[in-house]
Image (tube, rainbow, N blue to C red; front, side):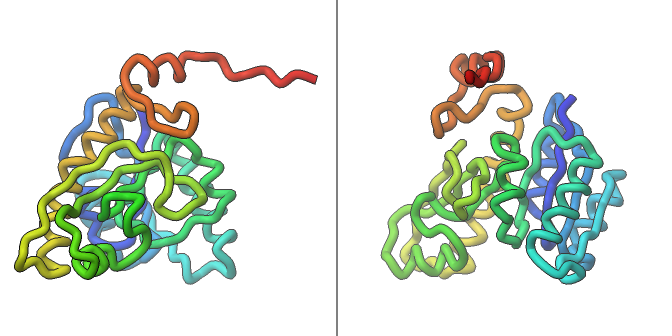
Length: 213
């Protein structure tokens, strides 16, 4: 059984999709929010999941908050950390701590449109396709190794809101499946890219390299 800790900042609709997926071999150990009023905390608590509020405003620096966040995550012995609408830029030390076991979903077809306002930017550029990307988290914002992507056609009458709503439905399908694959040992980072199937299994079974003098 793999312990999963999910980080949210609001209602956590992707968190809800992952919980509702009831992924075999996975246990949602905790949901942590950086905003005490995050609606997703109550939703998680109602389902018997540990719900932790960790207000980032109570910390003097990003690093101080990240240290407290890491302590809270490690208290639940997380095998996987899942960012589900977690609206914080994480420090390099934090991302290194969970390298290879922290996932994020971004509402664009990366590497296009990292950061905010993805749907507005896609429409401004006249994109014919939009979508979302599940990726491993690294220190580079929205640039980690890609696990999976889903795409939809951009409609002539789409607005940022309508496009966001349709992409969100796609996220709710794509993200639980990516988490399922991680839990099953079907994906791993090999040479900076995501491998699946036998290649992923081989990397997980290979012994760590021994440093030579």
